[in-house]
Amino acid sequence: MNPNSTNHLICAVDLGGTNLRAANIDRDGRIYERVRTSTPETEKAEDIVIAIVAAVRECETEGLNRGAQLQAISVVVPGSVQVGTGVVVNAPNIPSLPGFRLASALTAALDRPVLLENDANAAALGEMWRGAARDCKTIICLTLGTGVGGAIVLDGELWRGVDGTAGEIGHTSVEPYGGVKCKCGNVGCLEVYASATAIVRMAREGLAQHRSSSLHSIPTAELTSERIYGAAVDGDPLALDVFRKAGAYLGIAMAQSRNDCHWRWRLSCMGFARPTCARRSYEARFSGSCRTLSDCARRMRR
Image (cartoon, rainbow, N blue to C red):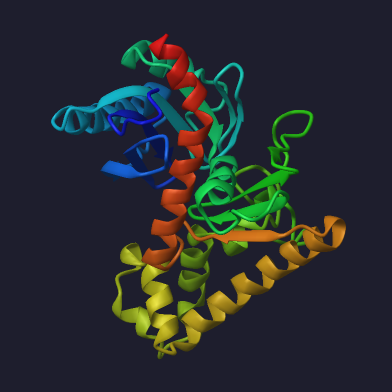
C-alpha cells in the first residue's frame, strides 16, 4: 500500500449478532464509504458469506467511483476465531458459523486477501491506535452490543491465550446459581445481564411489576436497548432498574478483573444504548482491523 495514498483501501467488515456493517478505510484510519444491513438469521453459513460479499461489493463500487481501489478485507465476528486458518471456533450469537472456514470462503468469493479476527480484539487495537487508549500499552477492552466481548492487550500485543479465546469476559459467570442460561451453554454469564439483548429481556420481564412504566407504550417486539435507555434518561423506574442491574453485574466482572491483574479499562458501547458510543466504537474497531491488515495489503501489491 502506498503510504502517501488515500486511494488504496481496506474494507473492514463488522459482523454482529444483529447488524452487519462495512466501511472502506485507509492506512491512517480514515473512514470513507459505509454500508449497514441486518445480519441474516440463518442456519446456513453460506448465507452469511453472501451478505458479507454484497456489503463489500457495495463499498468497493462506491470507492471505485472516486478512483479508490480495494486491497484487502478484514472481517470481525462476535466469537472466538483461529486467525491463522480463518475458522470461526465459536459464535454464540451467530450459530451458523462455528467450524466454518469463513476467511477461505470470502477469499474465494472476493479474490482478495481476507483476515478474520474477533471483534473485541479489533476494538482493542483500534482504541490503542486511534481511540481512548492511545497512551496505553496494557489494557483490557470490554465491548457491549448484542453480546459482551472482551480483549486483553499486554505490552502492546494481543494476548490470545493457549486456544485463542483469552479475554472473553462476557462468558464469565456472575450469577452461577440460578442464573439465566447463556447461548454458550453456561449459566449466569455476564452477557445475559449486561448486553443489549439482556437489557431488552430484563425490561420485558419487568413490565408486569411496573404497571406505570412508559415502556408499556412500546410494542414488546419493538423494544430496543436504545429506547429503554431513552426511558431511563426520562426517569422511568423500570428502565432505571434494568440499567442499575446491568451496571451492577458489569461492576462485579470489571472489579474482579481489575483486582486480578490491575488492568487499565476501556469500555466500548457498540450499539448498546447511545448512538455516540456506538459510532466511536464502530470507528475504533474498524481502525483496528485496518491496521492489522496493512501488511496483508502490501503483500498483495507486490
